[in-house]
Length: 415
Image 1 (cartoon, one colour):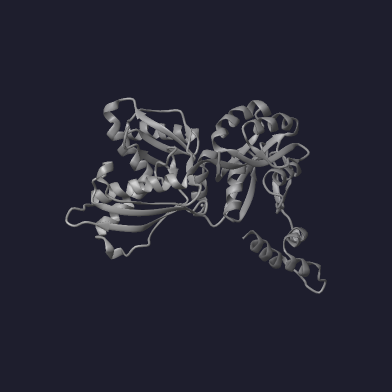
Image 2 (tube, rainbow, N blue to C red):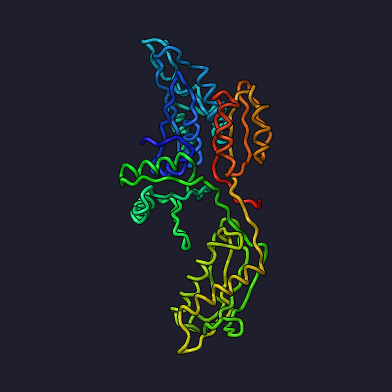
């Protein structure tokens, strides 16, 4: 199965790999480990998939054997062992020779104490089947997009057709987020990176004959509650509130990543079901835009009081009153804006490390202690998602095109 290696499509990579029982990762014996190789290897490791690395082009000039193995261990995984050796590498007569599995016994014993005991026990005779069985045994939440851009058709008359086309794309690919602003009617798509924007633009042109342009990409922030807040909203004609309904709501913080939950502390039968539905719909819609304009999440909303006045009360009254009650409960609780933060891995040539590290810090990255190898610096840490595009543009110049940067969503943090 072919999967794209670009970091913008890491969600598609992971989704494709989830359908597999194992992975064969192809590496050129000449070019060695590429940036895309690291993306695929990292994802297969994350999913716990057994991975076999296959080196091709062993008959090409410049093909490497021992040095390629060292590169694999340095850039992909230290837990790598050669199952074959190559005779005549770099020549037209190059061929592989299978290594006796007994030669990898120490490699297997390092990873498993039970096998180590068997391996060191002179009374236990391990045959090739035993080594092969042990080798097989040992081998044996995608984050939401953090970027958003408004998409507009070059022909305004095709706005409705554009929204329909994007709905089809979003239905086929759940990693494409789509929304339409109720006030401005602007159409926005949520993205993992700039390359994904280009792919959507091309797809719309080729498959739907719709030419579009995108606004500048912006980071998607969220709002989280500072504390618990509650409010009971009633009909108050003297304040211009004429709706025949009473709704009391409590909103409280929940665990990061838990989303929005909704519950009742009133009897379900105390209101007609349609009124309960109206309250919940109003609450969920209102949470899409908090005091700072971003979605409020990781919270629990509870209905704590209700009353209706037949025959005057309507579902529309409960929608309005619920929104007012929630606004005031949120105001009491307070919110803070949080930005998406990615965890990153970065390999740069040793002579570039001192240039790259200050730029990361200037972009508000929080790097861990560098791992300095003989030829590369390996840097890990966190960086605001909104700063990644700028860093990737600088990285090529800072490392003479040799830097390899991989990141994935980690969490939302106050900014």
